[in-house]
Image (cartoon, rainbow, N blue to C red; front, side, top):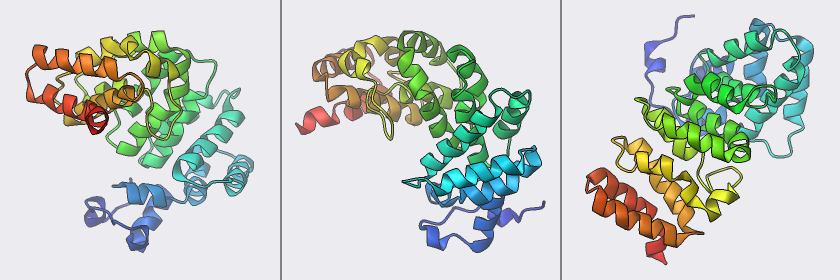
Length: 274
C-alpha cells in the first residue's frame, strides 16, 4: 500500500483527539508506525490485531480469545494491552511448531505495536535461557522506535531481577556496543526503581553490584545514555545516598568531562533537594 509521504513524515498530534482520522486508521490497520507517545497511546489493539493477525496465520478463535481478554481488562492501558495480547498469544503458541515463525513475523512487522508484542511473546518463554532472550531480542532492544525499546526492557525486567548476577555480567559487555540504544538498555533495564515496573530490591540496597555497568558508561557520548545513567543513580540515591555521593565525587575527579558532569548533576538531584 502506498502511503502519502506527508503522513510518513508527520510530527504527530499533541492530543489524541487531534490525530487525523486517516492517520489513526492507518495506525490501527498496522500500515504505519506511531511517531510520538500520543499516537502510541491511541492505538486500538483490538482493531490492530484484527487487521494484522489473520495475515500472520493466527486463527479467528485465538483472535477472539485475545479481543475478549482485552475487553475484560480492569485497567485498560497501552502497556496492559500489549502484555495481554502477548500473554494470550504465548499461551496458545508455546507448544506449537509455529512459535518461531510467528515470533519472526511479529518482530519484523512495520507496526511498532506489533513489534512490542514480540518482546513479551519471547520474554515469557520459560524454555529459553535469559542469554538467548537477550540475543534474540537484541534487534528490538536496538529498535529505532522508542516504544519498542521501552517495552523490550520491561518485558525482560523480571528475568533480569531473577538472574541479577548473570544479567550484570552480560550487560557489562553490552556497554561497549556501538549502538546507543543497546548501551542505554544496560542501565534502563536494571534501574533499582525504574518507571512503570517492579523495583529491584537487591540493587536498591546494594547498588555497587552494578558498578561494572555504571563505570563503563560514566562519560558516554550519548545524552540518551547519560540520562539513563543519571536516573539509575538517582534511583539508588533514595536508599543509598552514601554510595551515590561517594561515586559521584570520585567520578568528578577521575573523569572531568561535560558528559560525566551532566550525569552527576542528574544523579544528585534528589540528594541536593534534601
